[in-house]
Image (cartoon, rainbow, N blue to C red; front, side, top):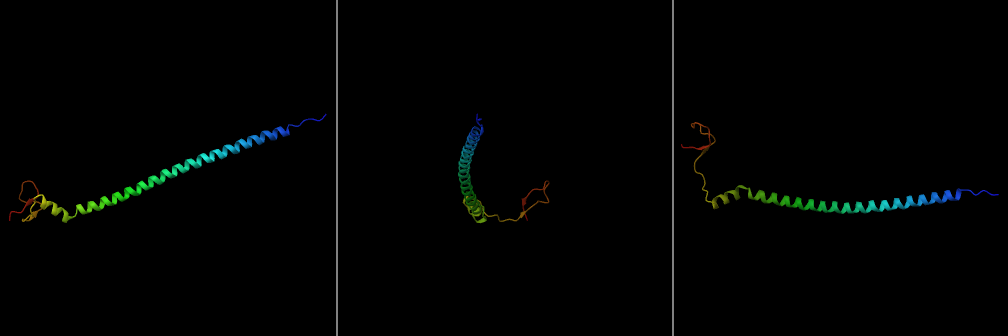
Length: 106
């Protein structure tokens, strides 16, 4: 009598396990690749948004510097009815009971 060996059955089981492992590895790789591609698109959108915000900040800084220039402030003050000051200004009035800024009376 010839004994049947379990070797072909073991090889078949090993082959099936290896095949399942291989297919699972490929599936996981596809999943992670697509997930990374989606995140890359989100990152690109955020980078584009950052560039747009930096341009807006630069533009607002330029507008702010124009509006805070002395020439613009003087023009706006004259439009609002302010008149140029003729007297001297002292930082502190030495004759006052409490030190406050005052116009010179001399």
